[in-house]
Image (cartoon, rainbow, N blue to C red; front, side, top):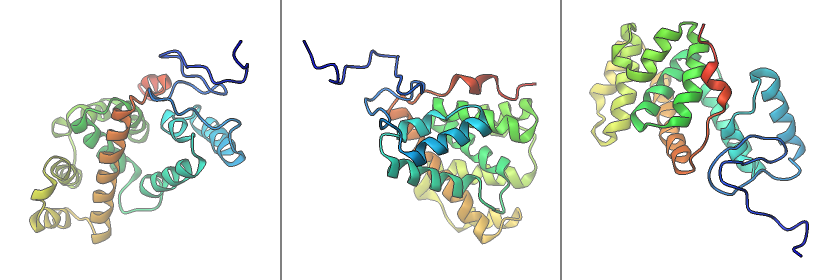
Length: 207
């Protein structure tokens, strides 16, 4: 008889560790027990969001890796910036649409609906930002993010100047590029690991 403590294969599609939902399709379950700092962070997510985002669960096999990811994300998406939080989410969904990232489109589409308070506008941006009724500033921002995502080697001074002309500062340009680059990485990681979006995202902020 096998040792009762021996790790058993996780049946496909069932990923459950300490009550956490399925996170991804590769076998890197969260540390058991969760380190105190990680458990506290997850409790805060439950309190504020009503869920623990699966992107965080996916990183929980390594507390240091999770901390680095969370700090980078929080610095880009939540810290003070010349870009509003909604504008940063607009970039996230625009880049994720280009990369056809199921996880990020679902999660950040929900965030954009919440931040704009306009589900129809948010859905349009998520599907095709060019079809959305946006001010020139945001159109310039998303055109820059799109070009940087599709043809990064073709970026030139005219692209940066178009952002200046739309009212963005030098720091704002750096932030637009940083958010765009972060989601280029995140989309690929989510797609490579078949990261599963939390089911709760689908119903968020649709009224």
